[in-house]
Image 1: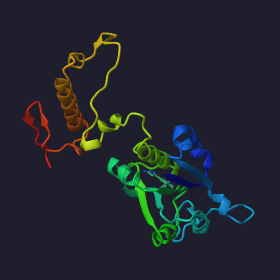
Image 2 (image 1 turned 45 degrees about the vertical axis):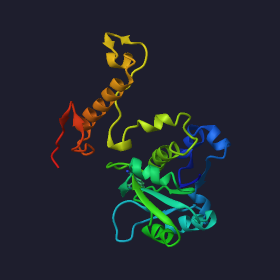
Image 3 (image 1 turned 180 degrees about the vertical axis):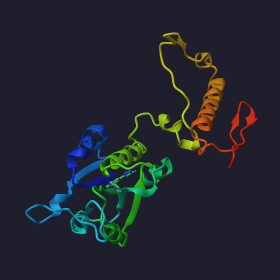
Image 4 (image 1 turned 60 degrees about the vertical axis):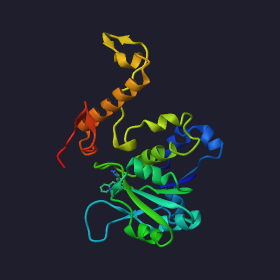
Length: 239
Ligand SMILES: Nc1cc(-c2ccc3ccn(Cc4ccccn4)c3c2)[nH]n1
């Protein structure tokens, strides 16, 4: 997978060169390119923003630099991912969907956002997804791009050493993850649940599922399915 990032703060995305295991990049599994949007400005001040039409506070990122960047990078076969507070929710399902793409081009905004015509124009040549990572407002799109990148890349075949660990994950299958424990068996008066030391894999699996259902019902009733059974009792949640 090729990943391109357009940003006015390229240093913000420097962690990408560190956080994505070098072997994934070295093996060609990932091809990461961070671009400074100012590369596509032509004035002395390398201007990327201007005041909003219609008035209002703040500044808006101009369309021309993005347009020239898209022209130079080429959008064939790419999915443009624009991070924004007004986007579709980023979910594990969307992570799986984006993981099927051969190329992602992240457009990271700042200020009050990117001129809408940048997205409208990109949509005439390729897929564009406007994506929000949560119902809170950041100062720019870079952090969201990093979060989306990590969630997507870890799903790529061959990226995670132990693919099995991808199976029992929070949000896979609509349930939160069960609690996890490791040595020592007793720590500061807190003991690991005995079932986990029993060697009874059936009982362990049942306990883990029950914990996941319980956690989901308590913390994320929006995710809990009415059909989930807790302690043998049908959990019927208000719709
Ligand atoms: N889930 C998310 C995504 C973002 C996000 C992504 C990109 C940009 C570019 C600018 N801003 C600031 C801003 C503030 C006010 C209204 C619009 N945008 C961004 C915020 N915040 N939360």
